[in-house]
Image (cartoon, rainbow, N blue to C red; front, side):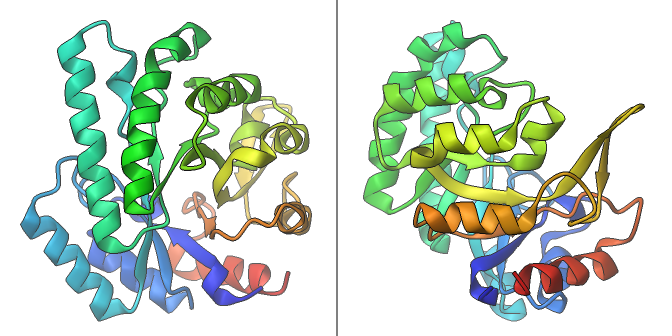
Length: 264
């Protein structure tokens, strides 16, 4: 695979400042990053000084900020109209930051909780956000993750169809789906028209629960993933999300993932 299709998430390096995280990614051979949307990487409410400093670190390391691992949209399901208005303002601010960095996408939160009853409340706000994002050339993706409606593919599909925008969809995450007891291949079949970004890691179900492992050592098939996404004309990044520092440090483990993925 072309190295320019591979990015890496800074989330596994969240105990370190963003400049260190970007330097580690550069050392792995990757030139694109998913920047985590919390301190000490991208603050939840970034200032001009924050954005300028991140741009400088990006230039210094040669690692482009390709996607933002941010969290706007949680309060779209709030019962308080002022909270929903504030959440929409925050969403637009993060979209502005993504446009400034030249990002392909940002991660969004589809309200709070797993109850699909919130879909009717959040869909109009996500639609307005998607219109704003479209003008900026930025896609919005809700990550398949337990704890939100995005962990359920059927709920994802319902929200995508309600928003009905090419600028809104799913951050497809096979390992998270597996962790949530969902067949990630069946989820792909259901959501393939709405995939805007992809995170890649690996894990397996054991007698003691769920275990994250090195890429290629678990139940997520990287070759299947690339072939499946290629079959639908996916043109975005494959963001490696190295979340096993307790097995091997990111600094030495991530380059191994990059090499494995380059060979696909």
